[in-house]
Picture 1 (cartoon, rainbow, N blue to C red):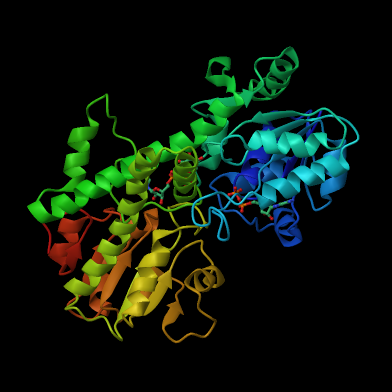
Picture 2 (cartoon, rainbow, N blue to C red):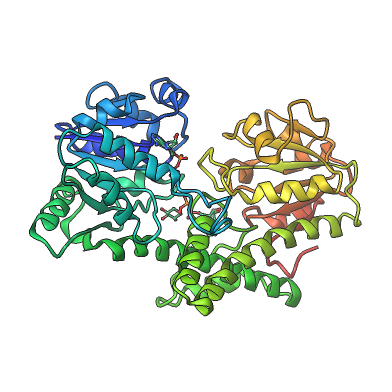
Amino acid sequence: MRICCIGAGYVGGPTMTVIARKCPDIRVDVVDVNRERIAAWNSDSLPVFEPGLDELVKEVRGKNLFFTADVEYSVEKADIVFISVNTPTKTYGYGAGSASDLSFVESCARSIARASKDGKIVVEKSTMPVRTAEVIKTILESSGYKFHVLSNPEFLAEGTAVRDLENPDRVLIGGDDATEEGRAAIETLASIYARWVPREKIIKTNLWSSELSKLTANAFLAQRISSINAISALCEATGADVDQVAAAVGSDSRIGSKFLKSSVGYGGSCFQKDLLNLIYLCEHFNLPKVADYWRAVVDMNAFQKRRFSADIVERMFKNISGKRIAIFGFAFKENTNDTRESPAIDICRDLLSECARLAFYDPKVSDGQILSDLGLSEGDGRVEFCKSPYEAAENSHAIVLLTHWDEFRKLDYEKIRKTMQTPAWIFDGRNCLDHRLLAEIGFLVRGIGKGNLA
Ligand code: UDX
Ligand code: ADP
């Protein structure tokens, strides 16, 4: 059997590496139109940072895992083709700002139709709007061959991708479960995962349930964060501590303790896009009340980011003009180099619009990526890129912590404070530092939902 995955990104790369590792008898080709990305996957410096991924890639690359830009050849040879391309929010025309831009998916479907000399199983791996499988099938079958389109959404989270892929909570496969052929296609894919995932964790549904389940899972997760972030604002107003509230509330087994970490807001390529997509679907199906319900989750996230940057300005005497501020972390979460929808982008833009000078340190995000996210050019005097958090903090008036990188918890803050301007502020956007200790050292400390501080 041969597998081809179109799209060598944060999902396609790690997912196919794990499939290749678990199925040594299956040849897996990962293809992409972006030749630089393919070259990076074939080098020692992978385009995606994920703990444990480098080692895995080294184990299987060149054996049964291949990265190539020759899309059509790999598609032609494959029995199963995964579509794992980006589906960003549409920025133009009908549905701009909420619908998904399906141009990459359509272009994949056309490539598959062009390259195929027989029928294949085509798997939607990227999160798609409900009923996209129908569009893909129509394009594929214009080739004259019979295709089976399956929905197999990926639930991995960045930063823990390898662990999530090796030991998933569930694998979801949606297909045409009303016909024998359709059920056989579902089983072909299920039997690949069954090599390392217990059968009871492989859930089979119809296509539309599978597509909608992915959107719903992300919407529920994002909703939990917006819920606890809404409470964080109330904690600040009342003197409560949001982490204590989350621990007390999360200990109810019906609620559960995960995903209740109040923060500067969620980021990442999925939550915002999928919520907007869900809202668009609700509006499309004339369910405005349902759309409004989910829109509130998005609005709360924007409010949380804005609230945080406004608090920084307010606390620093309503004036950060010309002040150096150290930015600790730019990735949307720890253990990834991905900055898509990172809350750091909006917060840093707010600080720059108040004429602050920003000194960045992130262990994995490149300087060029930060410049591009902030729409700045190289050599812009308002920003500086530092090799260590110590260098970023030197002469700064404040440290603004935006990503929960473990190393930030282990720094010598006593040493750092001595090199900073006074008063020295710390704005902990992830509540990951020891606030009491920092206050003892002499910092003015602000956390999220900490009504009891500064
Ligand atoms: C998410 C889903 O978890 C995953 O199942 C889906 O496949 C893709 O989208 P990802 O975006 O990679 O994964 O990371 P996730 O761990 O969900 O974090 C998303 C954002 O929420 C990050 O910015 C993170 O910092 C934030 N977050 C997460 C919180 O602010 N509080 C929490 O309690 C958890
Ligand atoms: P994700 O996080 O969903 O993996 P990425 O943006 O990291 O998203 O990766 C998607 C990849 O898909 C990109 O590298 C992009 O170049 C690739 N891609 C998009 N459209 C096509 C296409 N028609 N053919 C091949 N590759 C494509």
